[in-house]
Length: 442
Image (cartoon, rainbow, N blue to C red; front, side):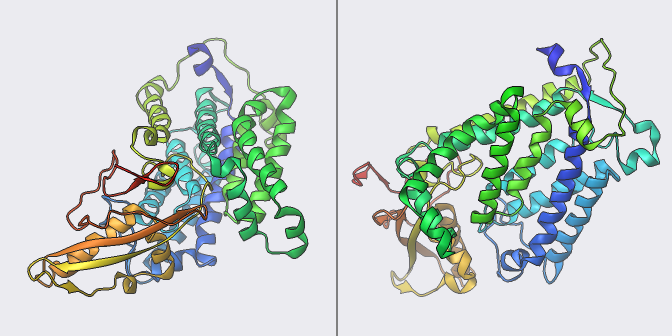
């Protein structure tokens, strides 16, 4: 195993991926400005729903967030060119982490994946060929790298696809109901709707998604099935790009293919002037300390995080506890409403305050169905009245529907959310639970 992990291979896949990755970083960040994503999520809101524990992380005032994203776009181009690579990829990772933890109204799994890959790239020698750094300092040039540099990417993308497939094994996906609703919402052209927005096609999409996520990486690792799997991957991701409009993610996912083809093939396709690598017979165990003390613990964490919801009481589909960081992608629709009742503890009288007026419509629509954001809103209400010298209790009247099912009470209406604590690792008892027949469970 060690011989395989540390053997030298052509570094063409990593070099080419650096170029793709840097270009996609620039597209993601500059595109976020052009499409209005930055304006809607950071400029227009008076505050953002940061990840719990990161409430201090709020948008820069004025045009600050535009500057933030322009800087990230420039850093992306620097990564692509391999210019001051170590500085540019670390700086981008820090800035993107700030964006990721700063808001979750527009949460997307590919934002998380992008953060993880950027973190990995901070440790990889991706600027050792076809880079400005090499032109400025020829001593940096190398034609090879240890095999673990490719393997870490293969394992990471395998984890994503594996857990995405496993998450689909629930009734709402297997009966095609969610896929049908997604197609119905996404496809608006009448000619296409007659063919694509049908129960048979929805079932096909549902099961094709399971099979694709489960098998695409293994099939691309074998020569006989690699090309067929790659063609299927192109069709799958382009279809998702057109129908779901999910930004760079389909192209980001396709870029990992460079690690699944033999390095020599990638060199011949993209770096024809690159000399053929003569692999030294001896194994030097390059990067052994980094693998042992960073990447192995990192991968263990990546395997544990998507499993944590199995150890939390309740169905993650309902409670959302353990949903994020688990590759539970495009699985369900959540609809509902939440209203707050505020009681002055001193007088016992209700007091009026509408937190909606501080939120954009999108923030409000997402907040009313997410337990962590409902809890955060209750904390904001508490702080608002505390500033006036009042101690209040905050109760939520919340009803939620999953995949257009029946509306059920979500938050215990007798729980004072102003004094309730948020449990990061276990079930929050103020989130009500139900059995398969929608009967309350204690």
